[in-house]
Length: 430
Image 1 (cartoon, rainbow, N blue to C red):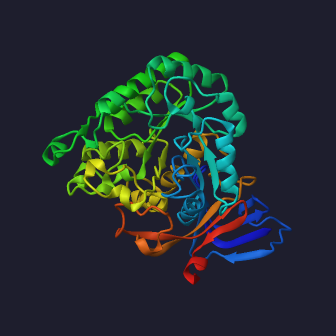
Image 2: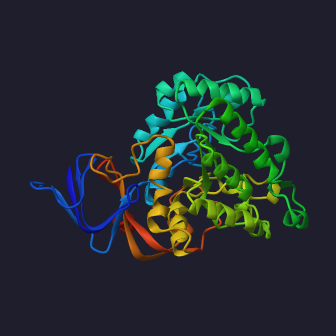
Image 3: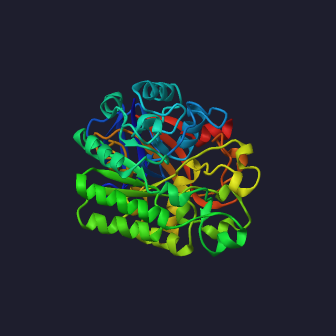
């Protein structure tokens, strides 16, 4: 289908294109942006007066809970929630049940994704067999099956020798390794940041060194092997500084941060709120401000949701006994654009951190509106006001600390491959 969106503000942060004009779609690709090509006769016209159109978001960490934990969520439920949040592409970590350590799991996930609403679902293959941290997985087979990288999620490796061998092996196939900088021995059974607040609350803490010690080892091995490594979900100011130094020295590393780490701190745990139980933990205001500053300087390349939906029982009981994680697909875009309101990032920079930035990390074609790019985009009303409420939440997991927050702006429609997969009008009429 050919589509013309007229009188709309077209924003492509990948090359800072920003103009009032038209977006032309031919089939599943962008035909033109800004001006209408001669001879273009669309089958459908949309008046975008007062609206913005920008690339669909690319989320580097979103657990769909399928296979293995369908009582928490499914690919169908979570991809619809992603579409509502303006997310067109999600990347699934390998810690499903069973783990994604063979082509069979990749085929299962991608097959079920094709039966869902249309959101693109990419997977990371397991770095080690069954994520047990000892024997390397068959990375070549995972790559052929469609894995966009390899990771051990938050499961520890048996030794740094295993990590070195994994880096060397992955490098031969050009695979990106996605690593969580988290020393298991220092993390222990901790459930929040170690400091005066954890002491006052009587909760076991996770020191900053759990991140920085692991990150130091990772960076030393990157220098040794030349492996392309992405560090997932930084939580500390010092960790961000280490990444900045490594990048300045030319090491092939990148990093992302979860959106909630840019707004919440250890103080938000003070009422034992289980919705603020996350791993890595919420740290100090100094850490939060340091992460924000690193993001503004471009040292952190992407913002992700770190989406982890849970059933209600998982967040009941004492804080330390609850399961960590936030249901976050539907707040990724609002929180990112709040950074613009706060004066931390310009609009182009903020959108780049959730579109072209994460797409580039894993070599995806998405995240752009240039002619020839996939027609994955968001129609957005910047003038609307929306409160985050449980009654219109689409994710199966309602475990978020952001219920009751109010944000400026609202997704009106999400298009993928040249067709609408979610629209505000269809939800309003449901």
